[in-house]
Image 1 (tube, rainbow, N blue to C red):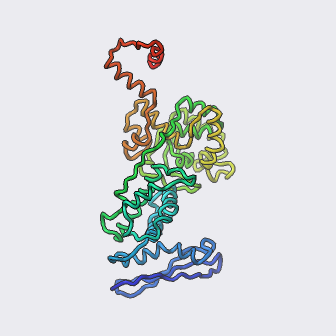
Image 2 (cartoon, rainbow, N blue to C red):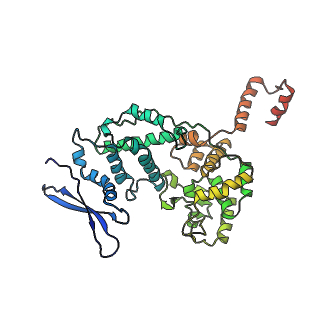
Image 3 (cartoon, helix red, strand yellow):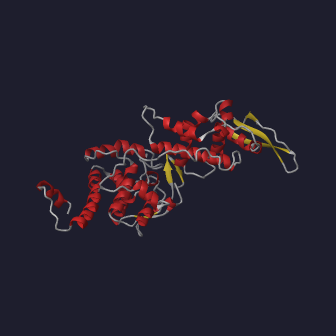
Length: 404
């Protein structure tokens, strides 16, 4: 039976208690070809103040209701409608396919970058060269060029979005226009690395829980979402191990970023001793309490990472004489780079970082230190020039001996 497009019906229903709610009604056809009426609560009038807001909220559901009709050849589907359907099916809180941080990142790219420029275009009319040209023109709010890594993320979300259309059979297999978009993710600037002496200097400028936050981040490489999501029950003091159970982003507790992220990590006995001392003095020391519980929130939530970084750690870094762009992820980059510089096995570093691939660990997170590069080059030169070589220029002799 040929299906007609269903716009459905939106109505406002009164409740005996609480605010009125919006309901969406549509019809489905059973196996006997008889129409069956369906109803779904969209939200309350407090959530959606106007009918237009409620109608925008049900667009993804309307796309699902008309999925069969959309599969017919020649039917037009806008990129904006595809975005609404993807958000409804993949990025809703009930979908549980992604962590909260990933959902926020995808939603930001979809609504702030892709929808404004491509929303009105039919998905069949999107072309690879046009996406590539558009990416090259994107700029930040201050007018500077958008970073390559940001462009690569936009391109990846574009690719995921059109794969969603292919999976729902609204596009043919192999017709994803974002697959062949050329976009480098190469950094313009190498990330800063905190050297061990700098980290020691930073720790001397911090007190109580803030010192412990940096110490744990610098010696375990935890992501900030994992660091602030730690509870006392996650720390196994007898076996010197931390179990990664959850992450927290913008105050919302959710799953870890990936399956590999859930792997337990070892903790040094000196760091464990500091954690134990902090637990003894903290007002929130039960197994279900946050390790870095915020006194302002009376222990119900941990500290806010961005606030701690801006108001406590960055000023402490300046007092310690560290003139680098210190961020929470700086500690994770430094952790990987220092492990590699120490000659640790790449597989060990990968598992300590909890990455799915050792190639990702080497390409993205590890960075060779200048001293290590000098020493490596010197060992090669010694093979060529022989062990008894002495520099001919006097002032170079001091530099030569300093490296030994």
